[in-house]
Length: 93
Length: 93
Length: 93
Length: 93
Image (cartoon, rainbow over all chains, first blue to last red):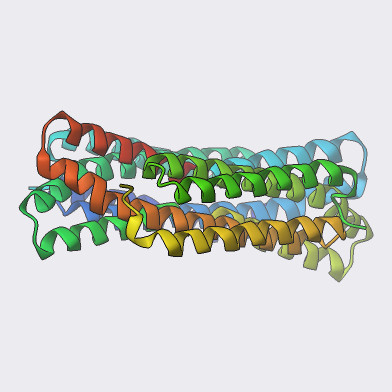
């Protein structure tokens, strides 16, 4: 089971909304909207994606990492390193 | 005319690809994909959105801001301030 | 004991180097260095700060959060929420 | 003359304050401060550096890029491309 199981519906809804935001940006470009207005919408979509990522990461720490750490052993180490790499990708993107 | 007119088709294509990436993430969540794999795809989509934003910003500086600066007057000042605010939103998102 | 105890010397060294980078940027500004060159050094210092933050965060997950999760109870919940908020500040900054 | 000449004193002051922030973080690490508190201060220093970068970038667009664009020619193109690359480094850092 994924760490986000309990929040799955809410996360799916948020992703569908982001898909709609991106489609809206396509339409803006298609109708030659002003550059700055397109950029504002791209920043909003980027922030929305990051919020979903932070939500997933919280769930992941709370469930998958917590479980591995409770059991201890080499798997715990792997999970922490994996989470750290995912956080790095988020911070750098 | 928008500053990105010349790149319009390429930008539209990139946005459609990002829309597809987001739809792919929805499917991953729907099929309970592993949290870290979902996060990796979200980081990729975020980077892709930022790349489009940087492209649009370059076009905007090159055309809209350049034109306003060449004409001078208060409009030039407005354009620079507006571009600075858009860059700030990008850096902060 | 802090989660970064084992890495304390290395982290202190990296922070001193960043302090030196910032002092270098001050000197660049003082001698009217070209804007873009100053910006390049600021981006480098920002990345270096973020790397230290990611290191600390990894240590924190590995030690403090791991310990709290192993013991369970409300403290575990608090630690995960606190880590999530710290990650959010990093991603947004 | 650098694009930030008029703001030089204010920028120098802000950089000195950031240098002090970094020195404060070193002291926190030296006295085993709690990881999350150290991370909070690193995020604050990162944001402060980014704010200085945005200020410099605004000045650069307003003066150096504006001048090159007003004169036209290949130099204008170079300046816009250079600014775009600096913005990309900021967004990615």
